[in-house]
Each structure stands twice: as C-alpha cells, then as structure tokens.
Image (cartoon, rainbow, N blue to C red):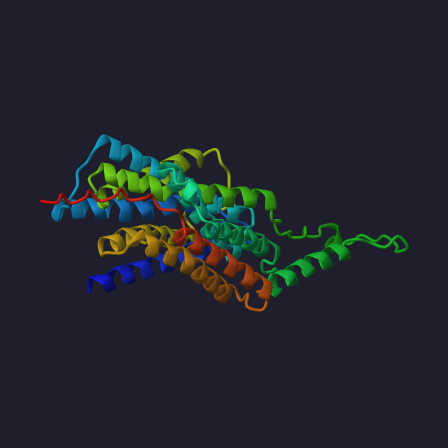
Length: 366
C-alpha cells in the first residue's frame, strides 16, 4: 500500500500542475471583465492567498497536532524562503506570459520542458558532476530545444471564433472608409460611428522572456528546497511553510502595494475571476504538496520527477484543446514537437549524472 501511495500522489501532482495554466488563464480573463483583456495582479493575489492556506496554514496545523521529525533552523528557513521567492517569481512569469497574449497550450509545455533542464544543470553545478554527463544527456537537451522550437513554430492558430471577430472588425473598418468617387453625405448614424474593437496582439519577445524566467525559477526551486530540507534535518512540512510565507510576500503583499498605482481593467467584484484564480493557486499548491508526500511514501526523485514533468504537459495540452475547441487547430507537427519536449525532459532527468557514492569501507579480515 505504501508503494501505491507514492504513485497516487505523483498522479495528483501532474494533474494539478497540468490544469494550473488553463485554469489561471480563465481566471485572468474573467477578472478583467473585458473581451480580449487579461488581468494580472489580482489573479496573482488570489493564487498567493490559496497558496498561503495550503502551504502555510494547513502544515502549521499538522505540525501543531501531529508533529514531524526535523527541527527549525536559521539556515534551513533562509534557504527554503529563498526557494519560495524563486517559485513565486516563476508563477508571476506565467501570468505575464499570458498577459502578453501567450496561450497555455504552448506556454506550459515549454515551461515544463525547460524547467527540468535548469533543475538538472543547477543540481550538476552544486554537485560538480558535469564531467560525468553522457552523450545521451546532451542528446536529451537537444531534443527539448528542437521540440521547443517546433512548439513555438507550429502552435495552434486562433480559433474560428477569433477569426470571425477579426473579420467583423475588418468589415466595420472597411465600411467606415468611403470611396473617393462617392459623394460625402453625413447622417447622424454615420457621424457618430462606434470604434472598431481590436484584439491585443501577441508579443513574442516578451512571451519568450517570461517563459525563460519561469523555467529558470522553477528549475532552480527543487535543488534549493532539497537543501533547505537537509538543513532542517529532513523535515518536509517546515520547508513548505517557508515557501508559503515567501509566496505570500511576493504574490499578495507586493501586488496589494502596487494596485493603487498599477492600473488594469477588472476588479475583485468579478466573482468568477476570483474563484478561478483561487482554484489555480490551489492546484499549484496541492501539486507541491503532492511531491512532498510522494517522497514520504517511498517515491524516489529519479522516477517521480520524470513522471510529473512528462505527464503534466500532456494534461495541460489535453485540457486546453478540449475546453477551447482547438482540436481542429492542433497540427501533427505541433504534437510531434510536444513529444520531443516531453521525451527530452524525461531523458534529462533519467540520464542526469549522479554523484558517485563513496566506496564502502573494506571489512577487516579477522
């Protein structure tokens, strides 16, 4: 039963992280309250509140009632808090990628593909194992790079509804342009014509920067959190509390201070946006909790993390294509590129060089 427990928590994590992007995207749209617009700070605050409840309040109750092995240390708290700051900045990167009109169907697979590479490289740097890396490991990195380029190149196009809105906008604009040969006549209806509604255009450079920041932050999170756990004598919940506190600072306190000067559409009165954003934060926090309990139930990082980073983008892509009706826009090239990203990410984790174990002391011959 213990072995089955680790598998259940692993599935829980990649399902939660797989739906995080699509759910957050819906929350941003509903929070904005205007077609084509996405709110950023307010959904981020909701994510931070949900993370605080699950990663701070609940663990503190468990520690108070049941206790846990390990202890609080200054070094462990500091390192774990820094890990929390990093992962919160990564979450902000996701929000900004969507704000710049990136779509979850390709933003999240790229993050899940690049983060394991960063995670492994950071771990290799800390353990100084670059010389032990095999050609298979570098081939895996190449697969992720090729897959990432393909995902961006063959990402699903706008849905038919978007094309219809764009076509309608063009028709309105064309109707407002009078031919030179036509006699100019002004009527009350034409004198005060409504302005055409234009949809915000994607900003590829800023989307790429936001994805890169998130991959860098989320990839560095694991090694730092593990180091914080070691400094707390192997405690699982205490480092999570530190992460939750850091998340609260970055995702709740800072945005609340910026709201008066950072003008954006929408507000907390959009209940639907609040609920969806809270759900996204809960999914992210439950995913982090799932990893901890997967380890507690006997799971090893060498196969838990490949399962998570391998299946999370699959769940993400399936959710996005199903809810947005993108099955007709998903090309074979995109699916092949996505498979490259997933396969490469799993191979990076599986074939990452491991520090050599010290030889066992020889048994003295009596």
